[in-house]
Structures are given as structure tokens and as C-alpha cells.
Image (cartoon, rainbow, N blue to C red; front, top):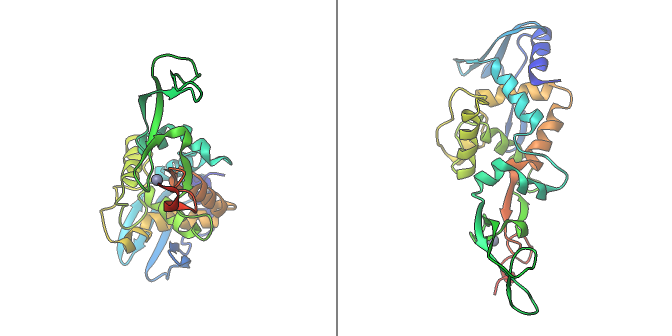
Amino acid sequence: MSMLDWAKRLAASDPNPSMKTLGLNGPQNVKRSEANISLKGDRYNLESIKVVCNSVQFKIDTKYLDNWAAIFRHGFFDVTSRYRDIKKNKIWKEIYGVRSLSWYKINPKTFEEVDDDGEPGNPFQTEFVYCRHCGLLIPLYVASVDHQAPQDGGMNKARLRLFRALGCTVASGSGKKSQAMLTEFFRDGMKVVDDPPPAGSRDDRYKLNVFGMFYYTVMASAPEGLKELDKIAMHSGFNLRPLCPPCNSRLQNTNYM
Ligand SMILES: [Zn+2]
């Protein structure tokens, strides 16, 4: 069931559901006096969404729910059981500046310059990417794929990073990746907020804005909604970055000469 369907059901069952939010310490309930949602419509037609936060009123375009659902359903970034497959994703490659360069290998026995198939010949084109920890340029095929917010204990951070990538935190991300993703969503007409959030402090980058609180509330009330959120937040391109093998190893710097 899509987010839009679920929001319609929510509107039909409770026009003023209490709001939930997410912080670095985990999910929290929002006091009605601080923020609340009014949903107008029924299970067939959701007419309007209004969020009042600290006496300021916001309208949320119902079309944004379709966009949100589409981003999750089609996987703006893939979720695969093999993380390395993200290296084939076009948008991920764009964001990390993957580029083709002229290259050759050598035959390890004869030291002769050879192409990708081991045949003597001209240099061949292969894709390269920068390690996001040390900055080294390496062939994409040897790059490791790392979970930016770690699988062990990083769930909450991963969720917040996902919301931030969608423009749903008080302050936007400062990194190139966040900026590139927001641009992508707005360019494709896939936006889920009116405007990208301004730059701000670290605290504000990890705090949901009214849009974020609204989507989180709807997701939290949908069956399997949070499970879906967690899967995308942790295992999609939102949370995966390229590293060179030494940087992705426990040996870290001891691996260098
Ligand atoms: Zn590195």
C-alpha cells in the first residue's frame, strides 16, 4: 500500500493523529501543543494536509505523498542484497564522480602492456572513483562499498540521513552528496518539500522539519512502514559510499606503505 493510500486511511480514521518525530536518540512523540496534523478528506480522496508547528501553519501538497511513495517503491537508489551492485547505479555513480579514464594493465609474466582482455594493444577505458576517506583515485571495480552510518548501531543516524537527503530536516546536508541528491529530486519533479532547507548547525541537520515529522508519522502508522524505511535508510545508495580497500579494512593506515 502506498503512502498516499495510507494517509487517506489515516484521514478517514483520525483527522488529527498525534505526531511522531525522530531524533538522534530515536523515535519520539510530539506534544500536541507543539505540533499537530490535520488531515481533511476520506479514504478515497485526501483533500488537504495541514501541519501546525509552534503556531506556524504549513500546508503539505498531497502530490508529495505520491513522490515519497515513488522514491521508496522504485528505489531512487537500489536496495540489493549485494551492496557492491550499487556501483552499477547511474545516479550513485554521478554523485561520486565516477569517470572513465584511459588505462592499461600489464601481463604479469612478460610485463607487456595489455588491454582488459590481456591482449597486447592500446590502452582501454575503465571507470575510476575517489575513495571517500583518503581521496585516492582507484578503479571502480576494486573499490569497496561501505555503510556510512554503520550497520552496527548506526540505524538511527541512517534514518536521519535519509530524511536529510529528501530535504526533510531543519537544516540541509553540507556535503556534496546531500546537495546532489536534493538537486536530483527537484530536477526530476520528485520533490517532497516546498524548498530545500537552508544550511545550519549539526543539531539541525539531524532534526526533522515539519515535512519530515509528517512523513515519519505516516510511515510509522503504516504496516511495515518503518521496516521499509529502515531497509532503504541502511542498505540503499543513500548510505553507501566508495572506499579504497585499505580504508575499508580494520587495518586502516597500517595497510599503507
Ligand atoms: Zn582510502
